[in-house]
Length: 363
Image (tube, rainbow, N blue to C red):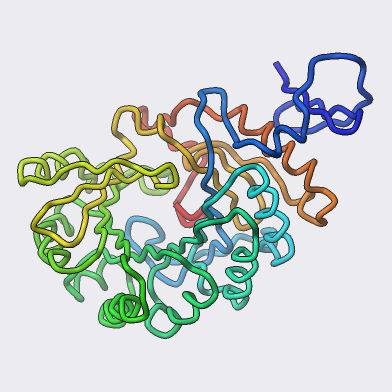
């Protein structure tokens, strides 16, 4: 049943995912002004405050679990969103209640206008947090500028504390530089850094205790991300997948306690131990009810709205990102599309949707 949205006597009859304009006979409608003033809520009463925005799908790492053959540009692919398109997108999401934006890639800091994008988002009213997910390639050199531009929190990938294993997993010899980049971030005033690692059976899972030792006296939230199945990596997944439940049981046996979540937090279950300055986060997409607390939507670097990391082709927003005057229609399309979001993904059935790898949408 379509949701009908109205504004100034015109109704927007939304037939997912298309928005159609037609004149308004007398009927029950949801006013656009009310949609714009309230938070985005789906049919399962989940509220969305968090936007993950990919600004490029280019990555300069060759991680074995994501892009083992390196970045392969598609022929005739659309250009990346421009700065003005990003400004219009963020303004619409902020009006709809978004308070947090995470900038992702590929590797987002490879864009020459990266700092301009951050500064622009930082000017949008109601956006309280601007997070960055990075491989850390430019962290040592540029983290000072990131902070000045408005980045409030950083997630950086470190899949091994052994430089040789780090190179084996990522294909780049940047371990020491990335570690110094993390230290530099603390030096300039970041109170906490989140570090992401994909632990894989028989590759780097033996480093679990080393990671714990590393964060004992450092304010690092060490986040272990469960390897996820994607179209290009089925065999890799079957060979190296390590369940996050195994890690959770280890933590609980060792006295780690689960912390409550904030409404702006991502999917990680965060654990704290009285003897450790750092924290542990576990991202376990195969856990039962993982999707029940979903609070985030994704927009790809070419302007498609994705309701789930493992889902559909995406709903094109780009035609409504060309001017501020289109904001009402843009908000209507986003709101309408959200009503088609599924209750959960189907990873348990081996269905990763159309996602061939995670670099294309920022994970």
